[in-house]
Image (cartoon, rainbow, N blue to C red; front, side):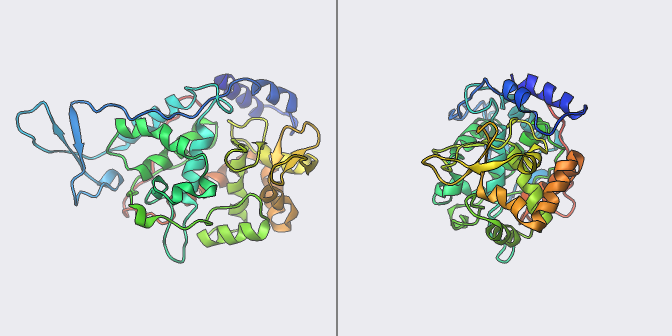
Length: 357
């Protein structure tokens, strides 16, 4: 089902089409729901991997060591991961994205992107704390923050991958999964470089650093300016809402933003501008629904992008030009994913080959 969706959407991108193609989009996403994986880590094989103090596995430059249990003498062997090793991790994630078709919209992609986003979006440029360098969402209280509700399923999904590739840090793995999700959901190529180190519970960030969907433009600027983003970048990052959906048992909100929640397009901006939005009548928190089908939703923070004059200028530009959106989105998501990471000066960025896109 998801493969058919990608083929259909690719055809839409290369042909003239109306901005609001509700009927076909609803049709190709009507079926298929998945559930989040909570698989146990894979069993270890004959080789036991050891992290030696002082080795500092910082991406391609760090050395990992392992002991081969089959040998009579336990002699450490160095292993320095290269591009091909990270591509193998990418492939493992990509091949599992659609393994369960009975939850949400048939792909783990959106929740993996949300994990990478929320792991990165805690950065504070003034204190240098937070960000993707640390993977501190592994610990309470950060894992229990309201904005991170539901992300345990994404972390659980990646545990078998971590067990299969124990040399990669959680910090690098979570971001690599986000890169994989974007590319496999027909998004732009996202350059990636390893170099993040895992930290302990003492590095957990305080609650309140992530955006609150119930708030407006002042809140958005406070949150994103703290990380070092400008208005254009705020709007470009918001385009990630083309993917996924909200769940009442997590954020409290309900529904998808677009009719193709596992395919990245600029439809999020088109829908903001072209549709008529009204308050949803329900017992949940305040959110908008499209007047025409009542099947889509927008949050107050989404509507702030068209209510604010400076934000709206960029919404209009991205709605009119998908290529521009892809170019700016790729640039700003790389910036987000790398905030506060002490990369080596010579650490190059890589672009992974897609598997299913």
